[in-house]
Length: 328
Ligand code: G3H
Ligand code: 13P
Ligand code: NA
Ligand code: ZN
Image 1 (cartoon, protein in one colour):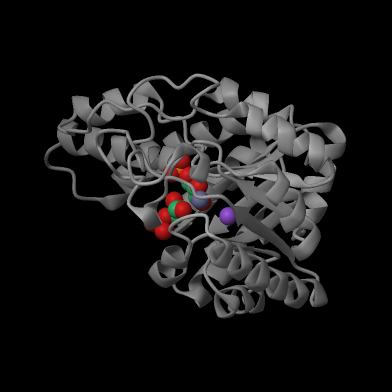
Image 2: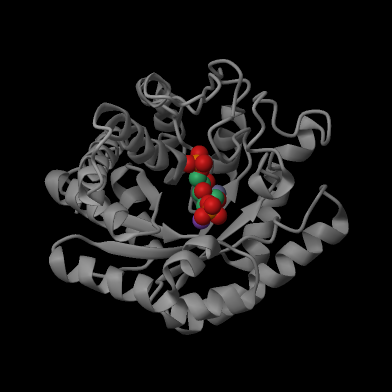
């Protein structure tokens, strides 16, 4: 059954668990997520980026979600627009059955100037007004992720935005977070606390300092009723990197966000945890393995089926680790 992000995260807050939000682009990823959720009885957030919507097409994507919902009627399902960039993206998402949208007003900001902040408050407030009229939820973002948009996510040296913007500019300011939530009335708030998108987040295993867990704790203390969202939360498991490279890949060694740090965040108000890279890697490591081990295979299902199984296991682990299992 389709539910809003607000309904789902209110439940998660009451019971103290976190919900992984997995990105989707195609049928195999959708099936992997729902099979995992059904296996452990977990509620689901499926999110689609603008890129996903244009890859699959809005009609295909929305009917695919309808199909998944019909196949798994017992699983609460929130369909969320990931990184919406303007009102039109958010409005058309809702038209196609999304029950939640992210208005990412931090996308435009290159630095934390007053004008950028005013822009973010203004556009987010307008999207919240529109979405709440029709019963959809809104996630806003405050702070600058070392992100794709700023060229900080996909760097192989793992240094992200270092040198371009100061660390303070990257992290969400707790005072500003209080003002932002009051001014916009967002249902959930994505915060910048040291993560970035993509596989190349850190050049060594990050500690609590690099991850600024204190920022999460402080914001949660000040905004106990606001659901916090962690972006860039793939863990980039070593075993998947190894499999990828064992079968011809040349991915440089990298570190993601350790699951135990995410679990710490969940103890301090983090309710939605965005994961895309791990799912991609779970599938493509298998593509390499199948391609390398059977050089005459040309049936795509022989690649896609084990890739789907691999992503399903990844999703199941996250549902269990974040405490979502048993809460559908
Ligand atoms: O925020 C980034 C997500 O991983 C989606 O990536 O824009 O390549 O679909 P994408
Ligand atoms: P990862 O690249 O760490 O999976 O982050 C995904 C994300 O934040 C999507 O919004
Ligand atoms: Na999002
Ligand atoms: Zn993100």
